[in-house]
Structure formats: C-alpha cells, structure tokens
Image (cartoon, rainbow, N blue to C red; front, side, top):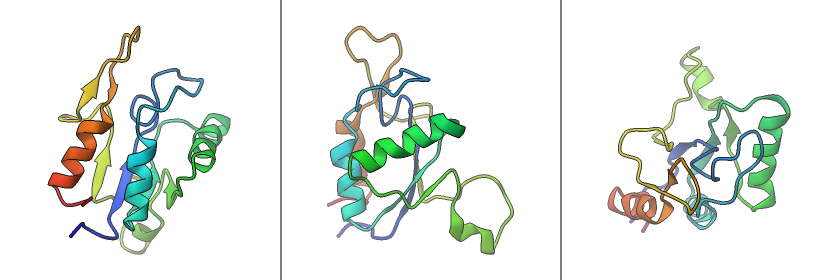
Length: 129
C-alpha cells in the first residue's frame, strides 16, 4: 500500500527537465512518474529558483503535461503553524540533493535526475506501489 497524501517538493531545471535555463529543457523522464504520484494522491509543489515570467513558464510546463500542482514555491498549509520561508514537504526531489540518482543525457555537460531510479526509490520508500 502506497503512502497517500504526501506533499512532495519538486525542483525544475535538471530535475524535471534537462538543463537549458533560461529556456525550458526536454522532459527528463519525469512526466509518467509525476502523473503516477498525483494519481496516488500526492500533492506536488514546484520548488524552484525561477521567478517572474520564467516561473510562469515552468508552471505552464506542468499544465501542458497534465500534471496538477498543489502550489508553487510555497506550501499554503504551513502558514497555520510557521512563518518560515522554507517549503515544508514530506519529500524533496532535486538533482542537487545528496543521493538523488543522476544520469547523463547524450551531449550534456551536466547530469539530470534519473527518473527510472527515482521511481524505484519511490516504490521502495512506499510513495508508489
């Protein structure tokens, strides 16, 4: 039985899409896994350093790919108990975090998140069946 109702903070560049900032990179393989997470009741928070128009473009990427976001760069539920600017989440997926599985895309200098291995970890940790 998978964990339901988890809140997951998701980085964008290098995690959900390949590195191309300020442009939007290609899907890094995240779409099916993110859809599976939201289908399982998880709430996704886009948690990125992008701002302004660039942030709007990232949020639009999620809409275009049919992935609902719970929030962007904030967790609205935490305002009841803290004024901290750090987004509270049960899990963070970020290519810069220690232990995040990475892979190199042909011709790229920087690795991106490896969503095949991330999905395996999500199953192992109970976020997915």
